[in-house]
Image (cartoon, rainbow, N blue to C red; front, side, top):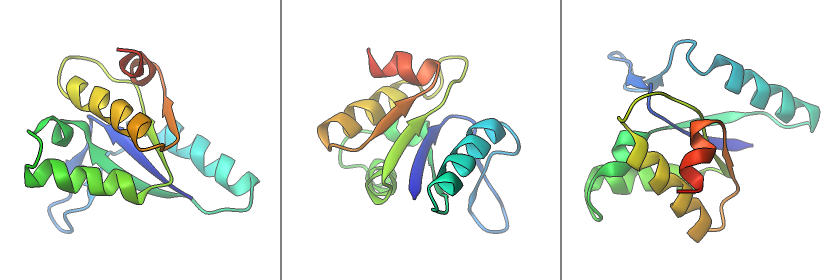
Length: 115
């Protein structure tokens, strides 16, 4: 099962360009991993930096981020602190609603879903 995690604490690995979060979202990833295994599936995490969803419509960065969300079977928006990436989390919640994509908001992620 593929889940897009729309998060603000992501950075790119210089060597591969892949998203890296360290242990910031370890508990979320482990919970998803256990849930996936309990139903006989493997977890594939698709990382989306929430600030990439704050670009204007049609911008290539926004379109690439939307393509990542579209490739996943569900979207999870975890918690976070501060202003950076908030508009992107709101965008992800609205996008999932309009595209009939399963959505789970945790803490700040759920708060952004009701904004």
